[in-house]
Length: 306
Image (cartoon, rainbow, N blue to C red):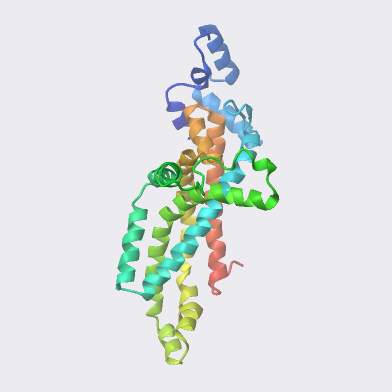
């Protein structure tokens, strides 16, 4: 990542330089940033500082990178958690319905709808939702804007009460969450459908039906929990997809999170912020895989980590 961002043309001095900046002043600024040294030396200095917890200084935010991460990361985590929860709940429910309605019109219709959203780029869906609930809602249909298409809260947010603040944040969170949820739900529903169909045909499910148990208890008490095992794996695999989606979605909706900050940092050649953001995303991917292992033990009593 360090080499890739340095291969991009230009450097922070070129981005910040104005028409009045002389060549000597630009050279002095590069020396102050350490950009006049060989790339291997720059990497060694950055790595040594990073190992001690010094993430560097962000010239785009005019603040230490750790301060920037502390202010932006909670916003990305809230958006990601809402999208992850929504996509798994919706995907699991749709998958179960498709399995129970196997080879019916309901199954076919849901498959077409899920394929439609699965094939759609997240940034394009974000733009369409912005157009529909923002511009067209007010100017074409005359509707009030229930779900704002930019930002995280309104200008009078600080003057609102506690309950009104929660409602305000939910209104601004709806469209970014919906964008990520619709894109991720299709894959989860497809996996859940296949897993349920496989489990329903097992001997113990047929035995439960033969004992006279109700269909509700057979499905939710016997088949559903075992069908969740492959879905636990997806919880770890979907974290990278979710993080890549937040980069585009936050940029479109103006959501002040790590994804949007990373895009701006790349454009501004803010190397310390790009590196720190990449590190944080990598840690979240590892945490997602750890979460998948923990869920395995919670769902399947045969799995134990002694």
